[in-house]
Length: 81
Image (cartoon, rainbow, N blue to C red; front, side, top):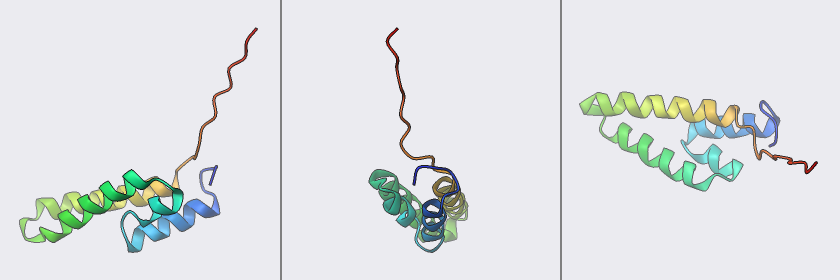
């Protein structure tokens, strides 16, 4: 999953649609998966307060987009001249 829009990123985005944070686990981003799942499920659990549910929905949408546009490991090459 090194390039944006790769098949792995599409699979991760689809995983995030059905279970928030699962796509991040597929990509190997464990902390992002845990935080996303906690925030989304916490927001959805407080649906009667409206605002947390909206925030949970926005974080859910963000997680789908972020998984789809993930660029992977960035390698920086430094040349000694």
